[in-house]
Image (tube, rainbow, N blue to C red; front, side, top):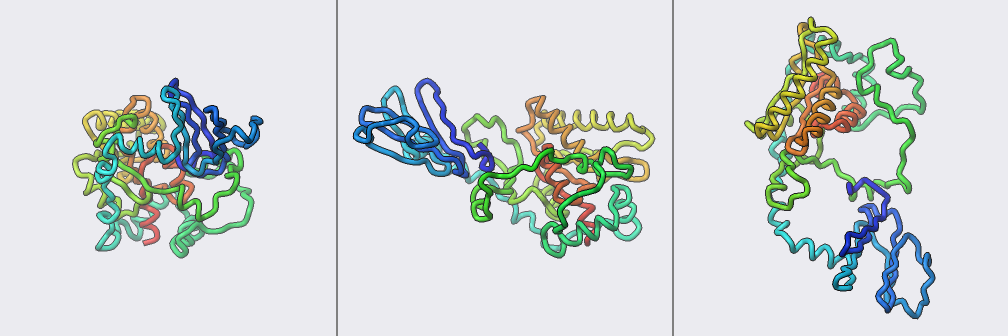
Length: 351
């Protein structure tokens, strides 16, 4: 279970083992009682089953990420530490972890961020992706100044994107249907312990395998990369990466979008089958004669296609999106399957 899933207390039975465990947040209770005649009672509350106190030999409560198990063949109870020690001894996991390569230090630019477009050329690209002065002043500028999203008043009276008469980026079409909260709320201290932005890139292989190859991966502290960091990542990936152009000829019209998506999906599948470990999706080739495929659409199409072909875990999807502007766009992009994301035009706009 992912660390941000839950709250959950899980009980299971597989023929030999009866197990009970807590998610890593530990926000849901799981208590257990053991009697002198070999019975284990586990549930969210103490007292669900009335037991004579004289029969009880042990009571306890599972903490965050803890578990208990009963081996029915041997009639033995295993506590959390015993279970994890047993599992840890099965393979040399400590040695395998050394294969995970943290590449954040390799991506730190030592010569500043590159500037590719200025003046009229930059403005043309901004117009192409629908960036306005309002976007630059109210969205980008506060993030540059304070390194966080701008704070606004409650309420949003703008038309839904699907009903708007003005151009709206594809990310505006993704809205949550309900207010989602955690219960109880996650405080900032607990959040640091159970949530992370760390991102692993590469061939994840079969997640059910237990071998050294499973950890031959690259690791980043965050999926959000600057222009210089993304360029350095491409250099580090070398021949293991394949770039796919996510634009199509303007004269192709509406049909060109569907044809481009078919081409992008096919190129991605072919690359993975040929051993590629990193796919780069980019709309940088946009020009007066070429139109950009919305990167949310392109990323989702590739991700879904690779999942259907049972190839998704063998490759990372790294996206350079000119339309990417705010935190919501990053969230949608990662939500539809991106491994890393680079808002190259937004960065150029604040350079």
